[in-house]
Image (cartoon, helix red, strand yellow):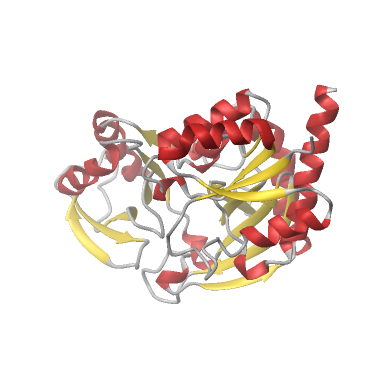
Length: 348
């Protein structure tokens, strides 16, 4: 029996076309069928979880997840089902734990031993750890705090001291005034440090709560560089330049950033360094196979020798869209077939 590639979607949501599917899903299904590989879409419904599981276990060669887990009411049940399918030999694209590992903001602290992330990057899983470290971090340099939940820049704050510290002070006092700019829309708020840290406790408490604390990179104003990846290949590069205003540092379309699409060859140094680091990245993030479709966002910085270098800002692999480049569906189909073929050779 020829097995199928199963695409998982969920009904509803703003990312759907008139046919009810994500606009980039059916192009992938059709591209696979053109290559002789059967494929279909299944809408995940927690009330039909067992039925879906048994169907995919019997008929699926691989699954491709096209659901943003953050928008899924029954995220844990979905991930549990995907794990069981992987355990039964269905190829996960990606494995659910790779989806969590690559997509979480704390990927930055996990990769601080590579040259992709500064080593003064911290993850706070408890309020106590946040209160102990952040006043010291802020004493060294301007910082960016990133919550794990949310999207489009919500809960991502650039934090700067209004007045510089006196010489020799290594910890910012809790009554010091700070200027806070949120990436969502670049609006500015002024706080006392202690009050702002109390406000930020909401980001640490609750399911999947945590904060990343990393140094602010002033060259973000030159743009964020997103690598669009198909497994270990950089397919295209999106250059995202923040709006041209004093406090703007957000590279989201919502905040007024301008997007430009480049070829990977235009960013050869960045691409080659990242590809060289991939085996180390993979090992630090649990040794799962690389996601099928994923992105890595970088910002420009200057190293100690005065040369350009690139700092990783985040990665995403939960449900990366390519609706503006639907022709990529054919390359994705080729990658899926290569992945199935490689797995067949390993298990033969």
